[in-house]
Each structure stands twice: as C-alpha cells, then as structure tokens.
Image (cartoon, rainbow, N blue to C red; front, top):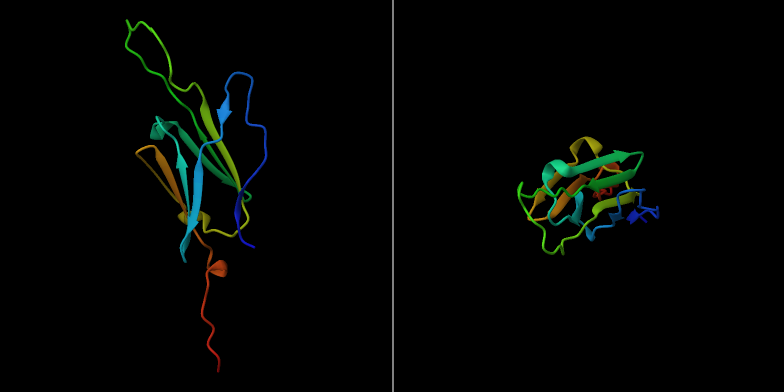
Length: 123
C-alpha cells in the first residue's frame, strides 16, 4: 500500500524543545498534499528537506519585541516545530512545491509517473 507515514524519532535537543505540528495528508490523481499547521512562523524560519524518502520540516519561532518592552505576562508558545515523514511512495522530487499562508504550510508532492493510475487498453 502506498502511504506517507510519520517516523518515530525523539524530537528534543538540549536547549530547544520541538513539538510535532498538526498535519493532514490528502491526494488527487496527480499529487499528494501535506498541510502542516505552523502558527506564528515566518517563511524564512522554515526548513524543508527530502533525503532518501525522508521528508523533514523544521520551523523555528522567533520572538521580536520592542527595545523598552516590559513583560507582564507570557502565554505564547515557547517551542519550535519538527516533523519527519517517511514517504513510502515515489514522488517527482524536482517538482515539489511549498506555500506558507495563514499559518498553514502546504507541500505539493507530484506523483512519479510510475505510480499514477493509468488506463490500459485491450487489443
């Protein structure tokens, strides 16, 4: 069965705590789509890598405050995001596209020609 599944890896380092973001996988006849929720993350703070069928997304949160700002209370999240997915299907790596809008990172992974459904005519 062709699936995209999550790997089970420890996602913490000594100083930064990573949280697995909420994500959804969907598909049409030509592509797989992965929608990843990354609230408060800027485009330049996202890293996406694909290596040997392993898709890794790391998003780092930056906190910028005015120079004379005095903190009275803090309720914002203090973590970065990390997601590792094993792609158990063939995709066209050269045509992968990413878009970040309204806190949702959408990855489009076009299916390789050999996994697309095709019609076979009978002679």
